[in-house]
Length: 276
Length: 276
Image 1 (tube, each protein chain N blue to C red):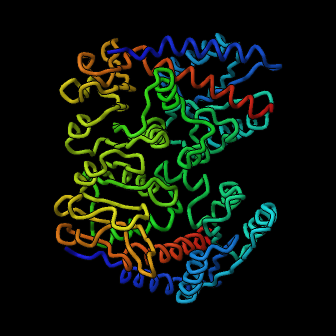
Image 2: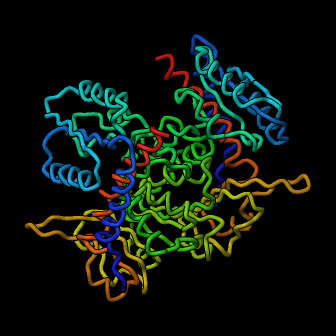
Image 3: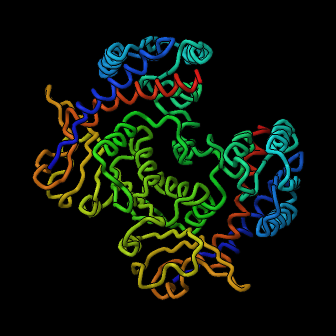
């Protein structure tokens, strides 16, 4: 069994991004919009700020409280769209339920949509000609590339059908010629599918949903889930799979660190699109 | 075994569309743009014209030869976007390879995109909030509704990964809580998947690719393929499945007639969006 070391790989990618950033005339800028006071979001945004600094990029943070009108947030995003110094814009999710998340997201200029969540970005993923793939699925693809895990003709099983992870990784794996099965909360007899997976991607957020009795010998296991229970962090996959799988992403240190690195990479792609 | 009678159901839908159309102030108008002289396209466009007439709708046809500049076609689509009397716009595919099909399609105003092929329409399908689902997948969903075929928790296997059929039907079946597997030309051991399908959707265009030895008892079989060989029409599925399946769409008379009916229905949705 080989560990798929997202910590190491993300450090390597950050070095590349930093070198690129240093070669540019202007400092690349990522704008982050937050609404409300989700505790996990605060940690994520702080991690993004640190990662930007490490790579000689800047992060601007626009923080709104829950009483803010939707129109005000949309107005700010439109300003950021026009601002030539801003290369990437993200709306940190989740935001309070009273807002129309899709509407706010779709205000982002597709050329600055570094989270890949506007309808246009998602449609391009579906059409197989993506510009911005959302950061978590992009991080998984980057792991496949680095460790030379070829998907052609292999059976990839994805558990979890979110717009952020499940659906885009399914479509990108189809583009790489995998046969792909999408499982989710309504799937009956989940084990039947997981036991047949050459590559199993689990993005549910349920501690140790998958264990070694549910996987195939030599399967590749990609664990996207993170659950925090009494101060400890758990993945969706029980570490006992390590005795049976060929490759496993650890939690923490697997897919997680790749996500932030891909946000930086997408921001560089945006910078280059806007300055070519 | 029950036949899923697309001919009957499409006639019923056309009656409904006609009644709606007759109730409107203006006559709904569908604009069809063709480029080059694809023989099959001529037949399809003629069928669309007849169907429009049957439903008291109008079809405008803009025909360009292969020497036309891309910019001229794009200019025409922009005119049609602005023309308030035009409700739906489609680019009849395929067009000659020298053109950038995606670029021309993406010129269509998403509010008039009744084929559901712009990036925005496809992104909305991916996000589970579609306005226009492409006509063939929409026709399949309409068959499921009419014959009360519930997908929740069932294993749907789709063969063929086109933007027009395979990918949108896969996503819509996931939205209906099916577990979905996408197979295609690079799938190894296709039978393993087809034999496990509760619902099998075949959209390949290869005469009798699937026969009764490859399906499960009581499976629902949706045959999208059409091959014309020496003047005869064949589906992707051998009719011998009828002895084993619970439901089968015949070819011809299954999915085919539904596609045109759904184009009319999408045009009515567009009319209502633009006139509400």
